[in-house]
Length: 205
Image 1 (cartoon, rainbow, N blue to C red):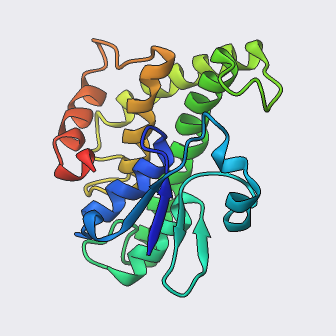
Image 2: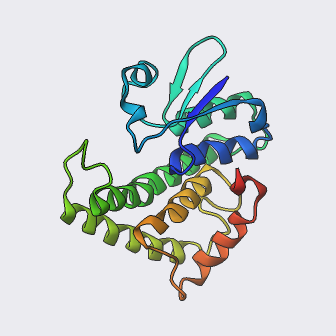
Image 3: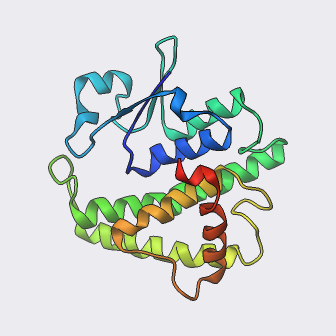
């Protein structure tokens, strides 16, 4: 099994944290660094593994390739059901999926778009729109406030237990440093949650 990743990118970190929570020894998996700044993820060889060009990609022992971080996480959830990070019952699974999608669409995506369009980091390979970057930064900032209010009455993002939704939120908030967005002093509930999840051993994966 091989994991193609980029250490600084949020989506590969999502998978590493998920695997660590499952007790999977990352040192036993071959990890291959993909330099996305140099466009290695856009090479013909890489696109044979993932035609969309994103990271991470998991190469299975039988030669199949899995991409999209949540799909990879779901693969490990089935192989290693304990501890459950995507829920047990139909209701739990739906609630966790709901919150994880909210974190993807309303937090991770705006942070990523604020970075890409605000910095022009990938201007050599995509059309950059500064106004979209500024709007995305504003949307990400508003989501920080939403989460602070939400966490006033919830231990974790999707309720009482740590789940993939917390992993998605954690990598998003930590990656937001590249757009100079941080938890505000008055956002005490979000800060409390962030301290708790950051203290987990998996956060260092």
